[in-house]
Amino acid sequence: MIQRIQTIYLLLAFVVTGILLFFVPLWTVAEGKEYYFMQSQLYTILLGLSTTLTVLSIVSYKKRQNQFVIGRLNIILNLILLGLFVYRSLNVSGETPVVSEKGIGMFLPAVVVVLLVLANKAIKKDEDLVKSVDRLR
Image (cartoon, rainbow, N blue to C red; front, top):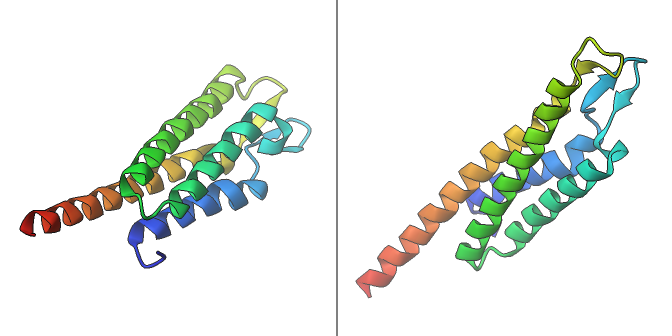
């Protein structure tokens, strides 16, 4: 159901995790090479899992409670991913020759978390509306 606002939020989260990260580097290595998420197996698995959970949440629009739980799991996964990125940037500081410049791709999981929170808020609102209508019957 594309007309629901949570589907729009989930589609935007899919675009960020599934498409945008292919074009935006996480950081730039000292030699001037850009470091993408595909160069690390851990980041690839976690972002692939996040994208899969987002698609699964979009597809399960008839089961709002499952959609809500999947959204929560995806939020936790993206917070873990954001924590790994922050740990990497603080552990390997800018003075060392490994990382010279942080990229915007490191903070895209934060954008995804905001979109998922907005989607879960809309899902909860829909669930409350359905429950209130059921009480009237």
